[in-house]
Each structure stands twice: as C-alpha cells, then as structure tokens.
Image 1 (cartoon, helix red, strand yellow):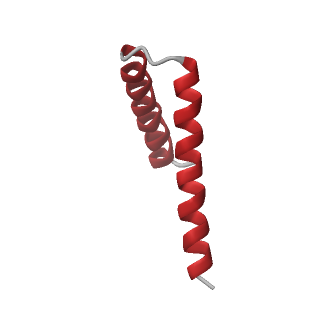
Image 2 (cartoon, rainbow, N blue to C red):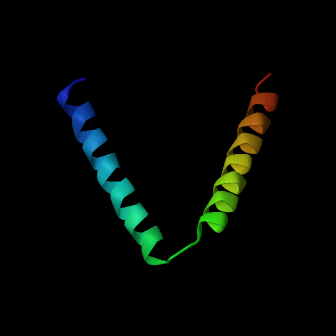
Image 3 (cartoon, rainbow, N blue to C red):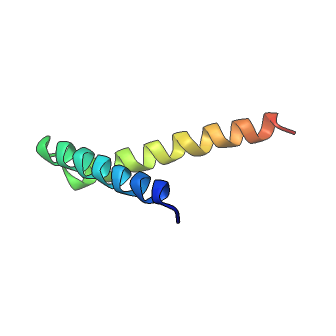
Length: 56
C-alpha cells in the first residue's frame, strides 16, 4: 500500500465511525437493523443483477 491508500483507509474508517455514532444516537433496535440491512442488500443485488443482465 502506498501513502494515498493509507489516507483513504483512515478517512473511510473515520466516516464509518461517524455513521455508526449517528445510527446509535437514533437508538434503532436490532430487529430493525437486520431488516434494514437485508433490504439494502437486496436492493444492491437487484441493481447489480440488472446491470449484469443488460451488459450481455
């Protein structure tokens, strides 16, 4: 890894900490967290599958 890669990793870690702190401040329960994660995962897979299908 070069110096720019480390800066990117540190910045992304910082953004993750800020996002997690904000998420925690809203006191969202574990069940809703799992539902939201599955929904976002399904959305990303659907879009990736769509673009993969039109790429052929």
